[in-house]
Amino acid sequence: MPYSPSPVWHPYAHLKTQRPAPKVVSGEGPRFTLEGGETLLDATCSWWCMIHGYAHPRLVAAIREQAGELCHVMLGGLTHEPADRLARELVRVTPRGLNHVFYSDSGSVGMEVAMKMAVQYHQLRGKPGKHRLLSLMKAYHGDTAGCMAVCDPEEGMHSLFAGYLPRHLFAPAPTAPFDAEPETVAADLTALREVLERHHHEIAALLMEPLLQAAGGLNMTSPHYLRGARELCDEFDVLLVFDEVATGFGRTGRMFAADHADVSPDIMVLSKGLTGGYLGHAATLASDRIHDAFIGDSPEHAFMHGPTFMGNPLACRVALESLAVFEEEDYLGKITRLNRVLRETLLADTELAAHPAVADVRVLGATAVIEAHDATDLASVGDWAREQGVWLRPIGRWLYTMPAYVTGETDMRRIADVMKGWFQCA
Ligand SMILES: *Cc1c(COP(=O)(O)O)cnc(C)c1O
Image (tube, rainbow, N blue to C red; front, side):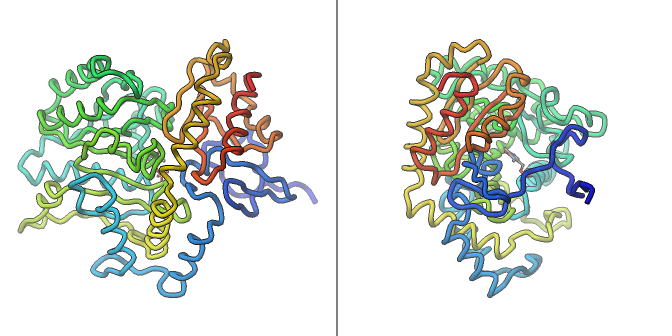
């Protein structure tokens, strides 16, 4: 029989050069298994969402139980126990003041909700001129049109669509590292202030991935930057939106990146780790100030948004179980141990740091990246890693790991060794 390619159109794929995708048949813990029996240790936990690994018995059981009761019902005019309980839990675990939860079905839509909420907030307060957004270079906030418009306009994946997208404002990406002194962070904050001074009258919100700009190049910065940004937003009457889609649920070493700085944003978006990756869902949390601005008599006071699958009972139920496992099994402790291994194996390796192809090595929480000078330096690293039993998928010049938190120490060392091994430093 002649080979017939699958009709599945794969993400970010060059159709001319792509090879048939390996077929995954199952998974357990930090590994998945391919048709034919090959098993791969997943260094990415499936785009950073499968934080409990595959086939976690408690998460699977939660979905099964919920499926027997109620798989779906609209949230328009109705509610249900998993949606109510999860909202209360999210209010409990997120930074102080985020007391209201708007559900949607993906990180991108969660960000669309956040941006629309911010613009309407200023409209309802009689400031309709504040309808643009301020984002950072190196940002990645999703692939829908509204989100593309706030991704890095040069290096981002969306420059092709520049003519199609609304034009927003960008401040330089922060350059001070995680452990920088406040004096070092001051230059980053001055750059942010300059844009706000010039444009605050037209800016609804400053958006950022706090501490870790993920898909835009794993750029890590300081908690002082978050504190400074909070102060600047208050000074210029601009809302602060934290996109914690990637950083939320432990990735930076605390439950949320905001916790490192003890800062509350006005709006915060969660997705990826929210359901432990078991179902697509997102939550946009808002403070009382935002929520209460929508209380009023005119038809314009309603927030006109409502994805069909918002608050899906299966997703909410598995998210509740995910959070329970996270807390009961001391995941922050597990993340601390993974961080220690990543520091020892990657950050402390002077040979790796000195390698001519390596521009930088960074570690934060359960995230590590080897930044190469050139994307071509990483051209076939995925195939090579697969031969060593590890699933690695670099983004551009960045060879990274964001493992499942259930990854054991030996497996974490294995991933780090394979990453270094590509540069002959293992
Ligand atoms: C992945 C990601 C998104 C988009 O989420 P999707 O569920 O893929 O739409 C938005 N923001 C950040 C920071 C992300 O990492």
